[in-house]
Image (cartoon, rainbow, N blue to C red; front, side, top):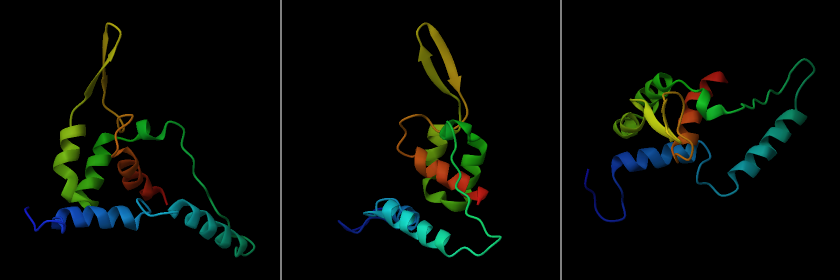
Length: 124
C-alpha cells in the first residue's frame, strides 16, 4: 500500500504498534519491566506467587504450525512474509550433509524474538 512520505502504510503502523505494545523498540523497556516485577513481587499476599519462565534453546522448540497459526490470528499483516520464511523446511548445510530444519525460528532471524513471543505468550 503506497502512502505519503514519512507516514508509512497502515500495515507498517499496525506492526509498529504491536512491537511497541510488547516492549520492543522502547528505550529502557527491560528496565521498566524489571522494576514493575519487583514492585509486583513486593506486593504479593501470602499464598500468591510470581513465576518466571526460562526456556533452553527456546526458539527451536516452537512448532512452525503454531507460529503460523498465531501470526494469522494476531499479526496477519506479516503472514505472507512469515509463510515465505517458515512454510517449508529450510535446508542447512553441514559439511557434506544437507539437513532440513522444520521446527522453530532460524538462528539469527530478526523476526525470531517476535515469533517466539507471539507463540509463547499463550503460556501465561
